[in-house]
Amino acid sequence: MAAAAGPRGGRRGCELCGAAARRCCARCARVYYCDVDHQKADWVSIHERICQLLIPIHTPLPFFSSEKERKHGMEQLLNRQKHIIDLAYSTAQKFILEGKPGNAIPAGLQALRFSIRVYGSYSVDVVPAYLILAEACIGADCLMQATTYLSQAQWVVLKTPDCSLAIQHKLHRDLGLLYAAKGNLEQAAYHLANDIYLASCAFGPRAIQTAGEYFHMADIFLRQNKMDVVNSLYAEVTAIWHAFLMKSVQTQEQILKSQAEASPFDEDREVGKDHLTEAQQAEAIQALNAILDFREQAPKQQRDETAKVLHSLAMLYYMSMDLSKAQEAGVKAFELVKQLPQQDSLEAVDRLLKLIKSKPFYEK
View 1 (cartoon, rainbow, N blue to C red):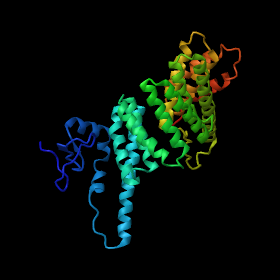
View 2: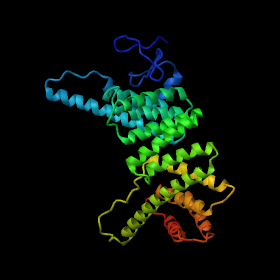
View 3: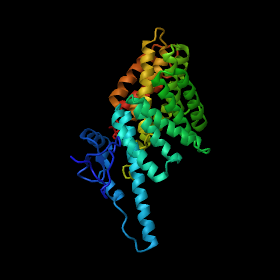
View 4: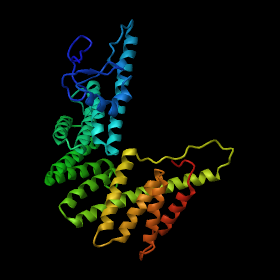
């Protein structure tokens, strides 16, 4: 098949790699690929979701009879492009959470492409797209590509004096993960230390956002066989999540109680939702399960810490309505707490198990 041509006959590059394109999407006729493998990869990742959305974006704007109509048309175009940025970013993030970083890369490329188009190459608003692409590339072991994306993100951040702490901490986290993947633990620790400091400034040292950074730092010390530091950091991560989830479960308990006491003639009330994002839930589940493995395999058992991890996991699974896993972790926590000299958390675990067995009507 001859190389695909653009609207004016110009040569078009592949959507994924930029090589000379030989194929064109038959549905939207707006994107081009070098071969069928790249076309399939893009379709599975993001193109299926945005195929028809690209048509009005890549169609020249009509002639407008007034300035008001022109502004309205430009505003519509901008909103469509921002919608694609959000959709592509969230899709890439979802693939990463599912352990499919390779599938996330085409979606990340779309997020980057439209971010540059909307905000400009040097805007800090482009940095999230660079970071999600870098994270996907690190997961897919494409470290050279990840390095390129992080270098671009770092350059933009350095040129933006008022860049938010939230963006800066994510940049240092990804730089830390990149150096860890390369085996440069000294540089990894440096960037993760900056990550912890910036996250603490942005959210507080006991915030769940900071807990994830403690966990990544613990991984560096684990690879250095510094078990005392690992133990301390894992205890901090567990304590942060345990305190947060205790409050979440108590709030949920109050909502269920008020619903049970409400008159059947009252207007329907919306069930309170947990404030955790899907990404935060996935990160917490991954971190707490890794800590649980560490606790259970440790030569010197710390049953109180193991019980706290199990209790945290039970609460986390309950809040996400994975009730079978919540029940399993909760029962293990209950049995372990009963063996401890101090059984302060026994009542809380027992109450959680009763909540799990009650199977609220909004269960997944």
